Length: 149
Image 1: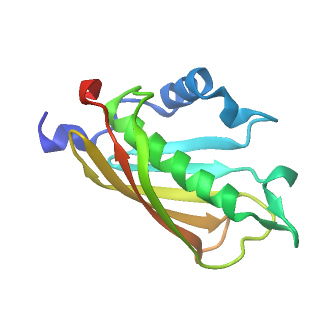
Image 2: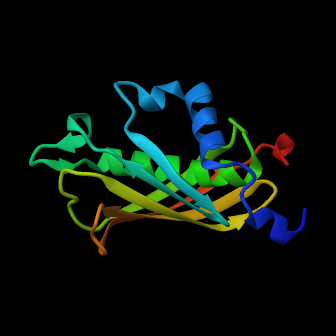
């Protein structure tokens, strides 16, 4: 595959959602809270509909919920570009929490920096819905199984 081909998603939002529901039903345990809003060339955007299970004392969205959204967002962006490969796995994820997000939806914008044969690297910027200042920023690396491409 040439570089231009790799930059275009091969799965639609609906196909990614169907894959997640089939392969990772635990993501929606307790009710659907993560929604894939878009996939594009080397990008994805997801929304966390934060409810009580995502909050920490003080009424803000918890760090573990933000971490999960960054991880799922990166996974979705990679899958959208390589196809339905359940065994693509996180090998590293580093997150910086920048400010407290208020109780409400959180948006993650994903940008893939490298999409290779065996490794993918991307960044996740998280925002409280409607805010322009990020609440967290993460960089992650994923291992892609050899049969994926």
